[in-house]
Structures are given as structure tokens and as C-alpha cells.
Image (cartoon, rainbow, N blue to C red):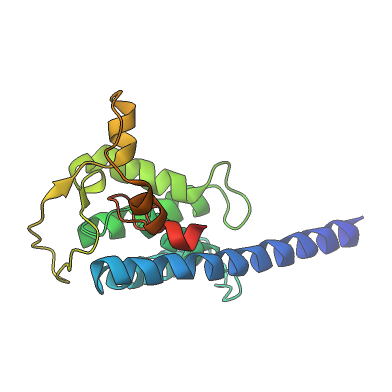
Length: 195
């Protein structure tokens, strides 16, 4: 019976890892579009998030006295998804702390790979929105070249989702919606790639 459960678990993990790698590949075009819209800052944010996720994975594995499995790319996927939910102007410390909370609390606190009761990316985003709503819910206008540093000056633009929530109608032309020419999170406003 133990061998059977072990075989099922190994098959389950192999499928989950394959799915994670496929999802990571599917998110990559969103990042390419974000680089087009905002410059290299989204790429640097993603690199910081991925480095944080790997460091948190290594730390959690050391604390749990387990070996780190290079085949488990779920933490990298969670980090990239979290960056796609953020604006391009989010400070680096917000990304680092929210990715750390997603990996350490959302994933490893509940037992690691495939043992979390809710998605770690959602936990990391919730932590960021509660802790830094001004940074996470303020969006730059598309096609704004942003510097790589944390001292950003930009005109915050109201996202269409907020306008709808407040009972208004966003002032967007159909062509701007199709082209993704509106403010919003890095991965959500890349309409041509999503379609």
C-alpha cells in the first residue's frame, strides 16, 4: 500500500511540476509586453522576486532539514505571478516582502509543495495590498519609461477596475482596450498577449 501511495504521489508531483513549468512559459509573454510598456523595470522587479523566492525556498528547506529540490519551480511561478499582479512602479521592498510572505507562509508553513490550503500568490498579494495599498493600487500610464531605482515620480492613473467599482464607466476607447493601452497591473493590461 505504501508503494502505491508513493507512486501516486510521485505522479501527482510530476504533473504539478509540468503544469508549473507550462504556466511559467505562458506568463513570459506578459513580462515581455510589460517591458515594452514600461522599460526594464518590470524585468528587474521579476528578477528580484525570483531571487527572493529561491532564497526563501532554500531557507525554508534548511529550517525543515530537507534538501532543496531544483525541479520544484512552483516558488518561481508564484513570484512571477505576484509581480504580474503589481504595478510597474511598486517599490522593490514591497515585492521582496510580499514574495517572502507568499513562499515562507503561504507555501512552506503548510508543508511545502502541494500542501498549501490556498494559493501562495494570493496570500502574498493580500499582504501587499493590506500593508502598502498606496504602492500596490496606484498605476502609471502605459508607455511611461520608468527608471530602475525606487525614487519614482509619475502621475498615478486610476485603473478601469476602480472606476467600475465606484459606479462609473471607464473612459476607454475600444482600440485602447484591445491594444492594452490602459493602466493596471503588469500582467493584466497586456491585452494583445492575453488574447
